Length: 525
Image (tube, rainbow, N blue to C red):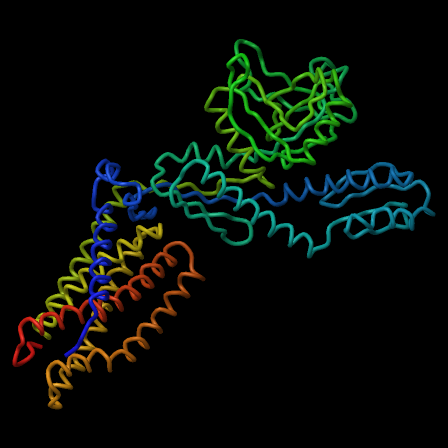
């Protein structure tokens, strides 16, 4: 007689019970799910093609970011040459190349040495005594890849901060990013958050002529005209345009945290905290420019230009203005998630309605139901009672698969439903191998209980081989695929692993338990 230990039977029973428990919330209403314990509220997440949502295709403006980096390169070069007391003139940026003239051609070696730490290609033009410095082609390619990668990571942090569930964010080509947001029917707010670069800079306002109106509309040398953010203007006052010095004293990259809050007057503000280096720099700035006006520029607009009445030490800064509570929350998300290294352009925006998703779900359900019914009928006709045992295992295979998708937080897409239907069809393969082996043992004259035992033992090697080869293909889809392809790989891999458990363990317990209870003279197979 085959002896299955009691602990193994209890373990299978517990697995079945918990499988049913974790699968049940997926088929319940959200209100009913909220009444369940926290550990039992996990549901299968539906993808964009099933529950509807928003699809965005963004382009990273890498050229704009590279121009900014060329400008920073010019600033660093200017500081290095002045520190080395080398004379130069007419420094400018042309097509990602920094150019400047030198007064004394004999300073070439000293200039090369002073600029060597910049890590870029330098060249001296004999005819016009001009130096040029630019990034190498390999460095430009590396910077482009880094810009896209950083943009993707920051987009992901921003979307996660909004509480969007199971977003799909992936790069496409060399400079594009695809964003799929299941369940987000109005992408306007998300697009506003993503569309802002959140490039925060701190620059001094011209002390004598703070606005463009004060100069009669003329931009002074060494300054740029920066408009005031209209959202910060209240009442009948028109937005002003500030004259801001070109030098960037500090950027938002030094921020370690940003949170919405309220001032002493109960007005909405954003409280920022700098890291150690940023706090030191900001302290030095406020010491040097006490009683001057400091412009906080976000995405090319002045959001606040307070007077520095005293040095601000410790790294805590408060941005005040005519903010609403929602504006402080959104601004905090932008600053906290990080500054995008390059602007984003929306190339494509689509909204998938829930009706289309409902049709897809219904079609997938119908396909799965038809597949299950056909497999059930085939197993009953071909293997009688033992086919019925296989059908019970197949039913629990579907239950366990839904439980696994819910517990792992996997997103179910339309190809994922196809994977489920395929898995259910493949799940009986192991049972077919086992039952055919039992029939062979019976024809060879083996005793009934020994035939059952031999059927499970001798078919094991074939079952493992066939499932492992399919599992390898599913893992390749999971690790190297993306989006729907990855979803198909997830359901395929989970289904294979679960089907091996249900086909080998569950049906064996059912068959042996029935045999010991019925003590048949022949097997209904």
